[in-house]
Structures are given as structure tokens and as C-alpha cells.
Length: 286
Image (tube, rainbow, N blue to C red; front, side, top):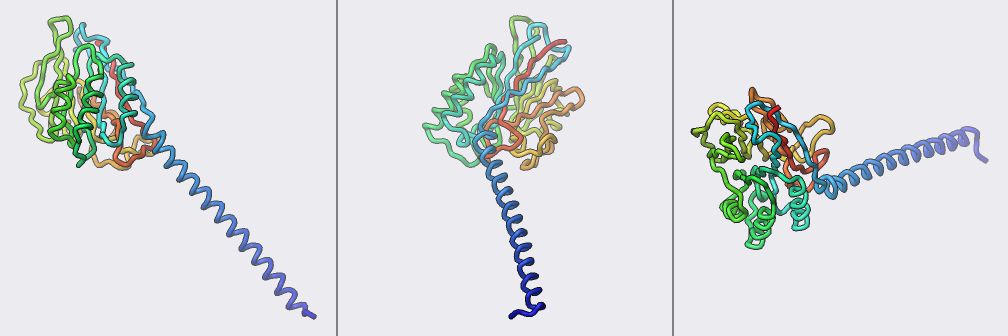
């Protein structure tokens, strides 16, 4: 027969086991919830965050805009990073761009992922994609940090005019033009002769904007390269995986309206709080 002390000791052991089991169950529940959250977040980032394309529409107003350009639509695409997008993605993107009916279409570089060598079938697929993009007035491109000689082949066979540290005057049924100025930010040269007309500057690496602005007046500047960091902190526009000085979507730099595209492709195969995007700018005089 057990003594009272032995009975109390047994009761205390049972209470301890019950409390321990409850703690273990609580920890297991927390671990399961965390794993479900992580798995759900990764699934969203891979299959939705990296695939659903946003259209970011902005009205840009400047009294230097000629009457003939008042109301035009400039559409920017950037950082395709081919290999992270497949043929189905390109077809979807083509349709989305053409539905915007751009007057001017600009591509701000990075056709492919870094260190990827494009095969002949890849080049053909990209040529078909870019060739099928419509623009009422003109199409322009600048080379990106990931691009190689295939960039020029693809762009030239797709009716894009590559601007390599050069400025062109663009007319639209009038005698007053605007300037479209494109920069090669891997081999930047800013010693250009540019008129005092309204100027749209296009570039890949946004951190070169300060060097450009020392010599060139840019009323509207469009860049890419950052991918918006691919993963952002929600509601804060803070890029996680990006080392650029200029990494947010928008900056006002003196008289320059500076917009940075979050791009279309990805390096991490995931995007969180930062969808791939197309930028649509409505240029107005007032």
C-alpha cells in the first residue's frame, strides 16, 4: 500500500506530464502555423506575386509639352530577364502592352538574366515578342547591364530604335518636337547636344541619373534595373534585395520627374508586395 507521500509524488508527476504535454502541443501548433504561413507566402510569391502584372498609370504635367504631344501615352517596359518568363508569359505581356495603345513605347534594358547566353530559338522568341508590340509614333530601347550583343540584334529586328548615349528630336504632326534621349549606363557619355525642348530621358541603371543631370536637362526620366528589390516590406516601398541608391518608384529631382520601373522578370523566382509592372505615363501640357 502506497504512503500518502508516494501518492502526492505520483500526483505531482502526472500534473507535470500534463503541463509538459500541453506545452509541447502549443509549440507544435505554433510551428505548424509558421510553416503554413511560410509555405503560403512562398506559393503566393511564386505563382501569383511573380506572375500577376500591374499597370502603374501616372499623369505627368509640364507646360513645356508641345500642343501636338499633349495627351500622348508613353508606355515603359523594363527588365524582361528572359528565362524567368516563358513563352506563355510573353504572349500575355504582349497582349497587355498592346491593350494600352501606346503612342511611344520604351524598353529600359535587361532583356535576359545575367550570364544567360541566348540560343537562336530564344532570340527568335524575343524578336517576335518585341516586333508584335505596337506604338503609334515610335519605339525606343536602351541597353541594360545584363545585355550583350544579342540585344542589338533583337531590337533592330523588332523595329526598336536603340539610343546609345544619343538624343533624337521626335515630331508629331507639328514643327515643335520633343527630345528622346537614351543612355547606355554601362558606358555612359553625357557630352550630347540637346535642344531646350521637353525631354524624355531613358536609362537602365537609375544611379546614373545624377551624372546625367549635371549635363542634360531631363523633364521626365525613366529607369529600371532595380526590380523594386523583388521583395518589399508592405506599405513602406522599401526594397529588400536591392543595392541601388535610387530604388523607390518615384523621385522629384529639381525639375526632373524620375520614375523607376519594378520590371517584369525576376532573379529569385518570387515577388512579394511588389508585382511585375508596366508603366503608363500620360503626358499633358496642363
